[in-house]
Figure 1 (cartoon, rainbow, N blue to C red):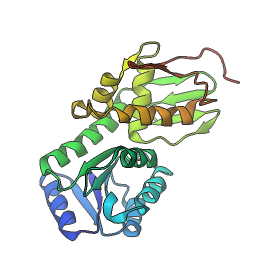
Figure 2 (cartoon, rainbow, N blue to C red):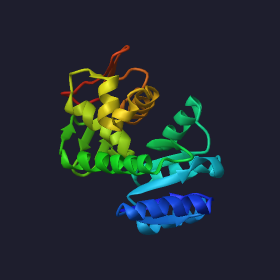
Figure 3 (cartoon, rainbow, N blue to C red):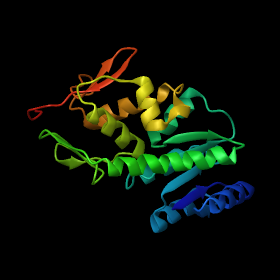
Length: 231
């Protein structure tokens, strides 16, 4: 597995690279966003670790560039505990996780492994749904809306997959956090809210009147199957 590290700090690149190598990964390193994108396009890494603090606003451009072509999981690193607004902005740009420096190396590796499991589990648990407007194929990692293929992050796809697997049943906030992000995230309640909003923007004909993803206030969300085409 190739893990791309984009961080201006050479000591961070070396520390993370050495740890990943010890754990059996192949680290790729870049000291700036441009070199990082070049490595991304040439090597197709399995996970991207991106320093959000030193790259500042450019980090969100990098995330969006990656999301234009791939669902590769992205971990953002921050020198300080991010505010909820910063977390939301990172998630909206396409990030899958946020970690604060200095990193606990064993936790860092566990987060990388969790993201990889999330992608692989979705690929293994084949599921197909189609109603003439929305089509989802987990084997191909593909979502089509109105005949057009829509790009999804690994986390967005996993969330949609779980909702469709449980169609007609309310999936609680806790269930979503445990199944999509893992038990360590059960207090990060902003994650489902942000991602559900993303899913609605991508799959709903009218985001102000959702027909696929219903909200059960203070409980969770429910996916509604459609038996006829959506106008």
